[in-house]
Length: 183
Image 1 (cartoon, one colour):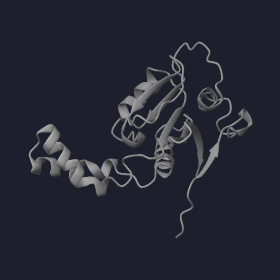
Image 2 (image 1 turned 120 degrees about the vertical axis):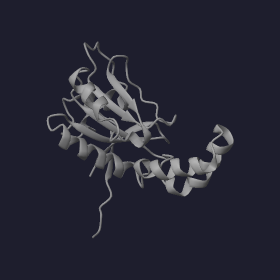
Image 3 (image 1 turned 60 degrees about the vertical axis):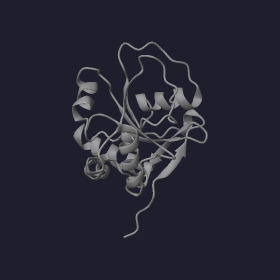
Image 4 (image 1 turned 30 degrees about the horizontal axis):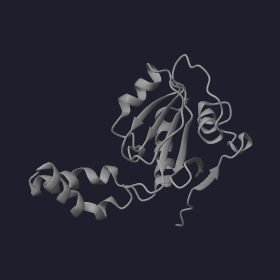
């Protein structure tokens, strides 16, 4: 079976925003970040944005617009209560899963020795504990492709929260722009 890779769609004008996102906080996020649209006052956060904690993802969003969760590869599988809290108490009405190019979790399984050595040398761990730690957690966080992972994570969250729009986006570290991902 051939898997079709996701298509990346840039946003250079408001008409580039996919119809599914128009009139939603996802469209506002794309306009704020990519187009420099002016911010308005927010009575409560509009969107939950999940991003990777790596420093190269720097979104241009105004204060009060979003609740942000920084988790490896924007993976929210271990944060279900935080997502539900953002909706139930924070009153967000959309979710954006923002992967990024050059993600350090791509090929994580190939970085086992470097990971273990760093925990032993820099953190003072015993080698067996560092190895077990990597072996236990790496499968949860390793990804093959940031765009593909964002699509899968967005699809998973759409099932859990069927009334909430969930967008898969990719931050391009080369130009600092958000790209829409079409599966």
